[in-house]
Image (cartoon, rainbow, N blue to C red; front, side, top):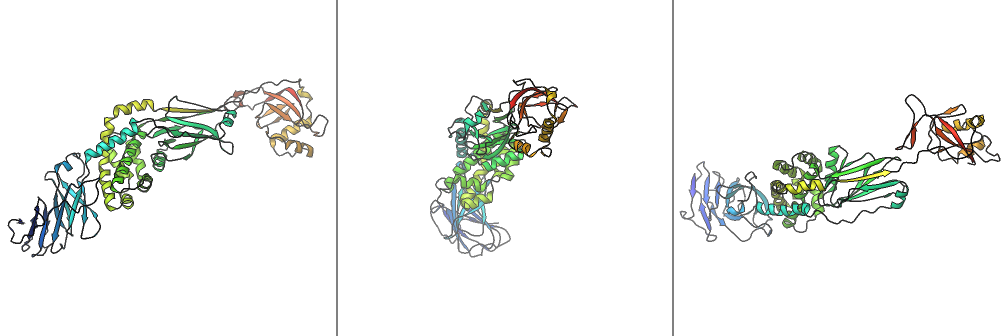
Length: 533
């Protein structure tokens, strides 16, 4: 291998006090090494440069990439009378302070910004040699090379600030949800009780079609995972500070009936309860929610970094364009079992953010800077997370929250007041009307009877017995209305009787009676309530 020193070469071109130059001799099959000023070197494969090429270069401090938020760790400019015919290696010295805080297991890929002539800066990937304090980069175009190496110490401090902002400042004050027709919901028998903390804000009202809905807003800066009772179903979610698309994809992948409530986001649940039924929502800061915090910290850090690398980038634009929900969800589920596993945190970050989408959104240079930081975020999150373990344990006790919605049960039907009723005196015509009502075909009725029945909104539908007339149907009111055969009679269009089951057990959750095994419910008339429809 030939070595050329600036002090030994016959032809010397000095760019500055710290530059060196050399001219290669004949290729002999070994790499040619050019010692540049300040410890920089160029290593070219045999034959990659002409024998008479003039090489000059060394460390520079001017004309670098304009990116004040990420200062240069070292830069070299190399000029040549001829460009290489194949890639050569440039070694760029970097100060120890630029990489001494990097974790021992952090990868050694380094961003090297490169600009050839008057062209735009382009990103190259260099390799950090920690023992020698240099970054090597391969290229077939010699010009200026600028190393941008993020400080892990700064990243860790920044990540700690973000995490403390999420977990330390527990309460924040999003606007409470608003529901229409809240009083009507209460009048309809719906009531709500909840844990006496400020974790969740809620309201219960009625939609335009009269169906009840529960709206919930999370009043914490971290996400919560909730288990829904059978009476609830998710109708709509809106994004808070954590992308709802990602959170929903992750919770859907769990397939356990859970939902993720994003900080400040609104979750709207449809409520479907029978009279007497109750349903609960139980929210907690569990392992899955903790894994979402790790992702949220990474996302916040990336947004901050991106805003420095490319001022003006929007949070929504970056998150919507770069989050890969389909790949991220399984990683989050894995992470839920061990939130302190540094490797899993790092792989989660790598899975959740699409590298191509990042560079497309931010541009080549800014995108590569963010990606380099993303490779380190996993370690930073794990470090900070472990340092806040006591706070996390405390949050597990404070952040459990339960909302209970109940629909009042109707009072059990009992014997009605009124004159005594002789069941045996009921006419065959009345029995015919009863059977026609429960069969719901009205085939056995006169025109007058059909007209009267058309005004009835609640059709009986459970088995009963009246004077030997048995039918199957459902009784949903405490009185059974039987229409007389002569709808035009002086007493009106019908006769109203009170009924009472003689062999059933009342179920307050449904408001109905349940027949004993092997039997049908049988009712007896207990009172005559009067004439009329």
